[in-house]
Image 1 (cartoon, rainbow, N blue to C red):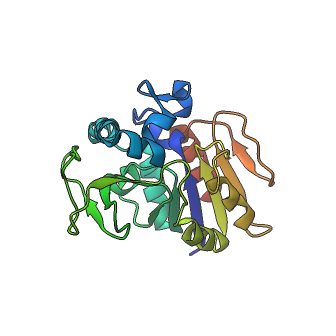
Image 2 (cartoon, rainbow, N blue to C red):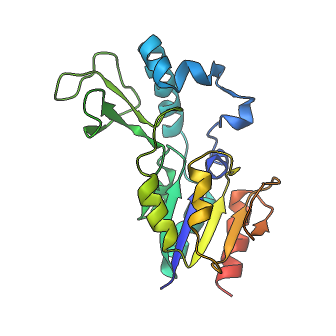
Length: 225
């Protein structure tokens, strides 16, 4: 089977009711990005950061995968599907996708503040001040904050290089290093972009100007003809 590599962004999750940073005028539930999503914010007010992500986690648990997530699962019957997502939610996994790489971390996991290799599942929606790793250090959200390196980008680049077909869903291609994955798609590999908005791209793409749910239906029709 051919390798179908899919890069997903906030646009695929927004149809499940998950609020996005860009759609809310640069605010997440009235929080400024520098107050909740940077290493400096964690040093300044870790309890505020914990509460912010607790609320996002609570919201996530009330949301469900949408048709776009399930359509990507359906494509696994015909392709080796690898999903690279910029999203920190687990909607791809809950829909049934088998191969998901999270570039920016996972909302339902925590990470040691002294050993980044110590990662834990969060039961329920709360990560509390005083919750510690096995080395006695406070746990933080397992999120790649703005200004931090993206360690899994190397794996994402390798996956992208294997693509026979490359699909982009619901991302503005403005956030790096994720947007740079387009440079790792081999020449002559067809690239499909599903997004209702005008998006700047520097490779030849087939732009399906639809939201994720309806766009993935059109994608399936094109790929399975």
